[in-house]
Image 1: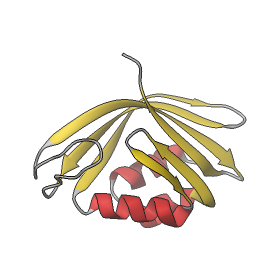
Image 2 (image 1 turned 60 degrees about the vertical axis):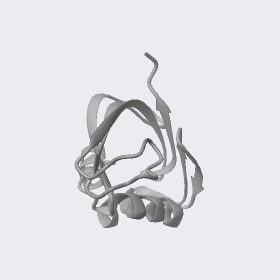
Image 3 (image 1 turned 30 degrees about the horizontal axis):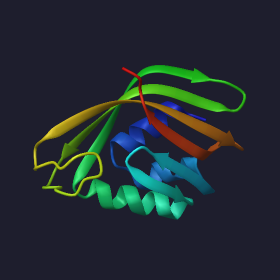
Image 4 (image 1 turned 180 degrees about the vertical axis):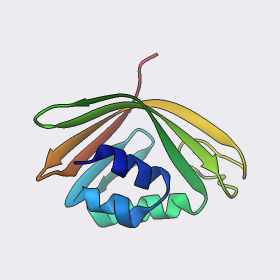
Length: 122
């Protein structure tokens, strides 16, 4: 698992490369959206989002154990087009908002099978 490559692909909106890190049955849990089940659902969600909003991950802490990876990071969302219905908060083109989150990635066979994003305390 090369998490730096994944974070770079994700922050670059390169879903072809980022999608290689998800199992076919990966489940994504976000604080501001219903759970997404399956690689295709996750890629569809981010594909639609990236047409109007880009997300950049700034990693503060990275921990790896036998079951997966935990990342403490800031997600910065920048609108490249008006996004009045963006799930985090409405954004106009050029506006940004940041959220401090903890992301737990559960691994199976070297790929993400579960991703759980929670807002960091404080």
